[in-house]
Length: 169
Picture 1: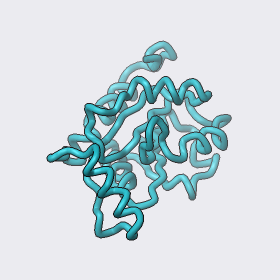
Picture 2: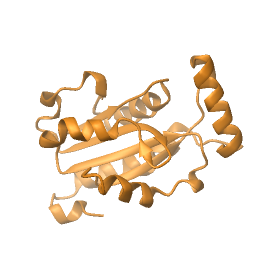
Picture 3: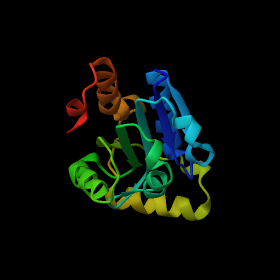
């Protein structure tokens, strides 16, 4: 799927793990937003952006859109990663929040997982442990299960004849 690109930002490797799994499943390129250039976005039909979810914000999304908005395709799907239970995240509210800030995203997905605490520095580990205690769950979906709905939508969008109305959700 050369027309698809997964772009992510990750401070601890948590979001990167999901981005790499999405790219591997879709057989497309993946790039850290730090190394992204406008030419990387040329001739793309769909961009998937991922960052850590904090409240109603996906980290780095605002600056990503501000920097690359002129060259983004019509279809931009965003995922936020975190440790809080899936049922406590209002994806529709987050999508509306981002749209109100001129981010032309098509859809938003939350991917829940368990961080690799041993790979975090002391302060990030403390924050992660606190988040796990306050909003975590007793079990976490496998990475493939967590990304499943996003991958299904991307596959459906890319296999369907493109019309602008088809991507409006």
